[in-house]
Image (cartoon, rainbow over all chains, first blue to last red; front, side, top):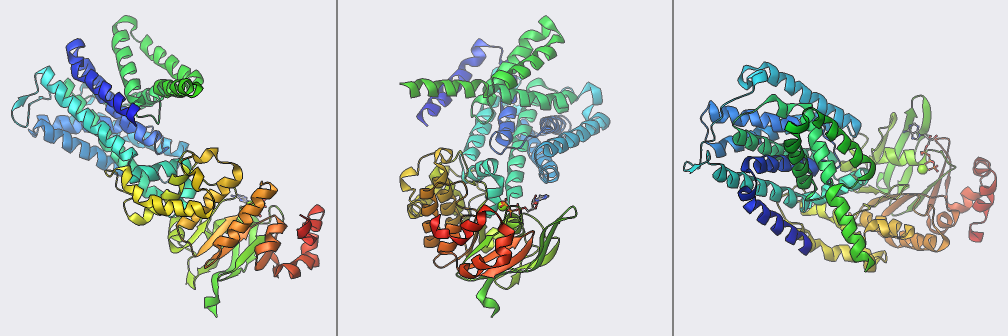
Length: 310
Length: 259
Ligand SMILES: Nc1ncnc2c1ncn2[C@@H]1O[C@H](COP(=O)(O)OP(=O)(O)OP(=O)(O)O)[C@@H](O)[C@H]1O
Ligand SMILES: [Mg+2]
């Protein structure tokens, strides 16, 4: 508990000074993907559900935020809330259909429905198809904080991330989170104790979708556009990789994984071009073969070993 | 008269793709009894449990609990009505603490199980009751241990404590002493006897010492059908039963004390 408190403090301090050392837009991108991965981890790590179409929530919320801010003139904060709620509602629909099945079938249904939405976004006019939804104004937060300033926006994005991260951790350590853990550990037993497991899984799915949506909406605000890439299944795969690399079922793992992958992509993109995909594939294989617990998981195990040996 | 039987099945049938695992079982469990369901491997005992708790849907037949037809209820509903089962393979939540295992069962009644915004410590009000339950099965000193680290016999005891937390009217235990050494068997047998006060227990059990020692009624199942029913002394000398068991288990059946 105490060790984790120190971890939270360090991470927050680091993030508060980060924009003075690193290009703020890069850190904001990391924060968006970190929130996305944390939301995904709530499902895979704490409920035992592998959603293979989670990009659909990132992408949908990106478009909804972009459209409501640019075309309907929503202020940024309202645009983000509206987009997150839309993603949560979509999560309710997709979740209701998918949780009737488990394991690989669950993953396939989420993937299929996400692909369906992808083709919808490709066809409907408001998304701008292949060109994306361009020119989304950042606007003024609460009517007076100018978000076109990268630093102002940075602290807004950081606040969103902290809120999302807090909510996920609260969920994990709540009465509801206890039931989720029980379902992950032994679903049949949870049923035999009188829990309607489908309802619990659905609520977890909706929360995860809503927070993934919040990440996607925030990302649109940062980059001023929403594109098809965010809804593509590549992105669904990336969030799996981030979570796996960082350590699924750990609190900081997805953050570490997202930071590593986004930084790597950023550094390598201009140097090795399309080889990036190959490198990502190699990392994936490496994780699965020798690095099962991910960065945070392996560090935690090492720490335990060292303190246990004493 | 119907009130005397807490559970009744009428001509229960379960077919798996043409294979009849349960074949027209009429089971009547008397309120307050310890009722043992025995039979050779593959007789259909676990399948009957799965039907009773709705983990499987019967092909034909009906199930009545306290006189009400529960044939089409959902498994979680069955549990809330007061029928709680254990499983043939150990059914603890392995990576939760022993205390948390019991608390999960208690927690549903608080009505906050969907509250994702509430801190975990709001569950601490249940710790007292959870410790009482653990004390009942002799696990109070293990409360903070992770369940997976418990020795096997203690895991079964934890399951019983978790089941008791729901205060079920009817407890279904699937081979509670399977794979245990003599000491653990005695421990669990006494435990079942102890917790059966004021409730009904239906158990599948292979250990004849346990069956002979504590059950009021025995139903013998073979190839999905009821072969014999009655008190231990009657059933043990029934030639049909002896034939169904054949081989080594006959001696076991005839001399439970020597076990
Ligand atoms: N889901 C299933 N699909 C097909 N056949 C099944 C299924 N479940 C059980 N069976 C078959 O039904 C028969 C009865 O199985 P069941 O598990 O009920 O036996 P049991 O009496 O509990 O045996 P044991 O003493 O070994 O636990 C077996 O032949 C088994 O192979
Ligand atoms: Mg069985």
